[in-house]
Image (cartoon, rainbow, N blue to C red; front, side):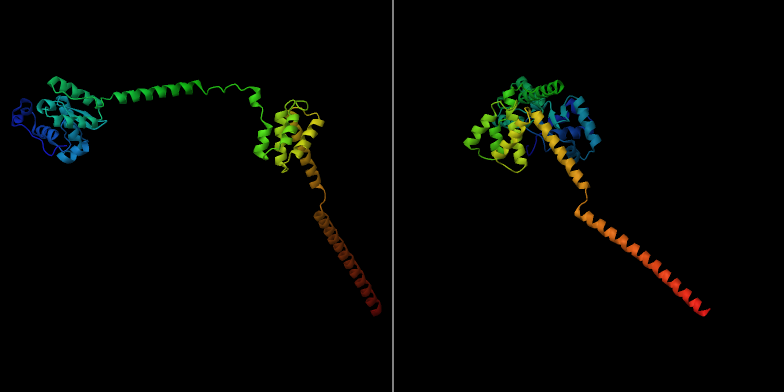
Length: 315
């Protein structure tokens, strides 16, 4: 941003300027000399700033910007709020190395790549050499935009295709490792336990030995035993009952839990000591009430006897 801008005296005799209204002349001078102007003629000018500095309202500012766009004197980008004075380079020479360095710096800050491309084309037209190696002409942004679009397309295709099927897993991979499960839930496994566990895994006792051993260890931990001896008793019990698959084992465990629940309900229906005591107290209360009834009958009978004797005595 410069501290001042020069305006040639011939400006006022320009045929284009002579045909402008006073309002248009004022605004045109403002566009070339306001506080946001740059050496390259491309700068950011929010309409709110134009309102404040010119004293015009928003409607007037927008009307004047559109009018000068129609005149072919400026280009305005609402997205970046940037303006480009199209004939700026024609009236402002850039032969000085310092000026060129300043322009290169300013062009790096321009957000609208079309303005930069147009400015460089004008430089070539008027014979001003500008090094564009370090200037972003929007190519990187275009590449990033294309990459984002490709990623969005891939994502949409994936969503349409649905989730990818799970990779096939061999039966050996599906089978759990009892030794690892033991270490994770009980602790370090002794060599003797490993040897004994390996024998249970040979398939002689169960069709799914690994799954059943893991289930037995889980049952051990649930019951708070945490010992291989306890697990062995569980395995022996299942083997003696002829349970060879995990499904049979789980069905038997469920049946056992249901049986325990049924027995508990039956035992809950029987009289408890507290209930028996209550019944005894109820019987005692009933007996007491019966005694009261008997006493009342006796008292009534005795009273009748006494009254009868008194009447006999008077007679």
